[in-house]
Amino acid sequence: MIRTRGERARRREWIRRADPRWRDVGLTVLVQSAVSMPFVVPRAQDLPPADWPSYAMTTLGVLPLVWRRRAPVAVLVAVLVVGGVYKLTLDGPGQPLPYAGLIAFYTVALRCTARVRLGVGLFTAVAVAVSVGWNTGTARELLFTLFVSVAAYALGRLQYTRQAYTRAVEARAAELERANRIEAEQAAARERARIAREMHDILSHAVSIMIVQAEAGPVAVRRAPERAEAAFDAIAGTGREAMAQLRSMLGVLRAEESAPRRPQPGVEELAGLLERVRGSGLEVSYERTGEVRALPAALETTVHRVVQEALTNVVKHARASRAAVRLDYGSRALTVSVTDDGRGPGAPSGGHGLIGIRERAAAHGGTAECGRGPGGRGFRVRVTLVDG
Image 1: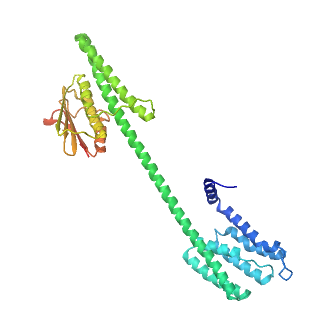
Image 2 (image 1 turned 60 degrees about the horizontal axis):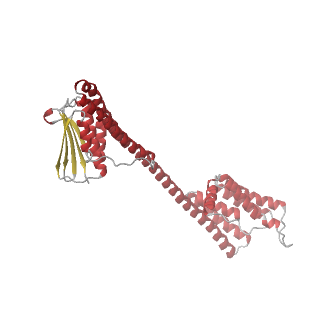
Image 3 (image 1 turned 45 degrees about the horizontal axis):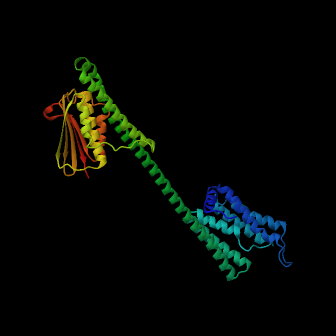
């Protein structure tokens, strides 16, 4: 059966995450199957007999591998001792390779410290020399046994390096995942704050203008009916404009293809904003100084929202008759100031409005100052925004 790359990867992941104790049991069974071969394959008459005591002793030399991860040195010593006892007391079938000893030595190389590995290596070298001397005493057997022992040790150290690298990569991936999650949460929080500012500015401005016009409506009906009609028209126009901006914003949030799309208001839309404010009875002047130039869209939206919020506070709290809006285009900065002749900073700040203005200024590397106007009269909001 041909497995796809994804199936092979899932299988490797399943094996990696399996309980190590069951993997050790499986390895022990595999080694037991290998050492059982000389006992089940027919043997020549001149070879040692494959009897049950020899098979039991061979099994006893394999069984400690079940605990190789928990006590690698003790398992290696147990395997070597059982092998020595087998050689001295029984004349059973030999094995092509000392499977259990090599796996135990590999485990020591994989899991033990350098000092332990050095001591175990010296002990194993002595054990190999004694075993070869007791068996054939030939250089061929000695070199072969040393070679396979060194190979098992080298494989253990390579596996240790691979596991350390894998752990480092996984730790780095987990760290990046945490960093990305934190960044995503921070981005979501910033976006929520931005949307809250936008909705606050839209609703606060529209509702303030509508309240002022609605309060003036009954008076106008009694004294100047023609002005009452204009007041009601202003209320309707302001409401429609607020609803259009809210629909546009909510449509973007819902990602609806059919939702109306319109650009965020900028400097050019200030004229309409000021006209609506004038409809509330506040006299508003507008001036631009310096070299007027095109600004980035985000900066233009910030300018519009700053002026909108500042004028909303004037209408709601200042009891002013006049306000002045000024844009000063510098070489690398734009200064927006809104000044009124009202009650001054003793008036309420209008909730989160001034906080939102400061946040908008900080988002463009600028500053916001709020306090008494020139000569200590009225109130002034002065915002500097970095352009470029």
